[in-house]
Every structure is written in C-alpha cells, then in structure tokens.
Image (cartoon, rainbow, N blue to C red; front, top):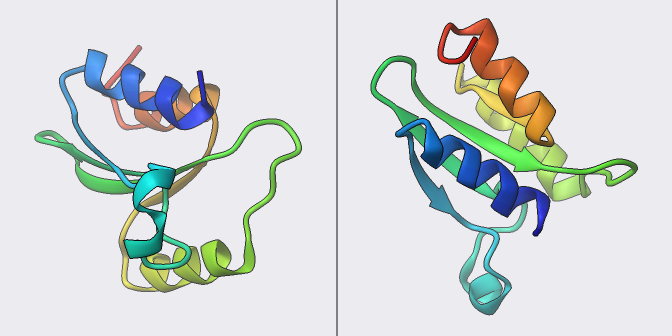
Amino acid sequence: MSAASEVAAFFRSLGLTVYSFGDKRHARYATAGIPDLYVVSPRIGAFWFEAKRGSDKQRPEQRKFEKTVRAAGVPYVLGDLLEAQAWLRARGIVK
C-alpha cells in the first residue's frame, strides 16, 4: 500500500472526506506539484496532505505549492501516517 493510500484510509476511518490527486492514470491532467490528498474535516476545516515515506523528498514543484498555500494561510502537512496522526492529535481530532 502506498503512503498516500495508507494515510487516506486513516483519514476516512475518522469520517473525514478525502479527495485524492495521486492517481498516476490522470497525472497528465493534474497541476504540477499538487499534493496527494485534500482533506475536509467538519471540525477543523480543510488541509492539503503530501504523503512521503522515509527518504522520499519533495520535488521542486511540490515545495513551490507548499510555500504558496502556506503563505495564503492554508494548512499543508507533509509526511507519512505517523505525521498525519500527530497533526490531527495536535488539533484534538485523535487521542
């Protein structure tokens, strides 16, 4: 299972709505740098999640996207399942 699939399953298990952009079959239609997931929570609003494991690094387009949305005050999370859990724990969504 990919990191994005694992994290998406976790978010869905909590009742969050998840939109996935990591599908390689439609990559030619995607904007360069767009994160793997857009997640919507009724309690904390929406945020972007870019799934990375271990030594995986962001591509330059991904860093640019992150910088752009953070400058606009839009939450952006980078990491794996542990990072997803920690980010939601800090916001009182999980214990």
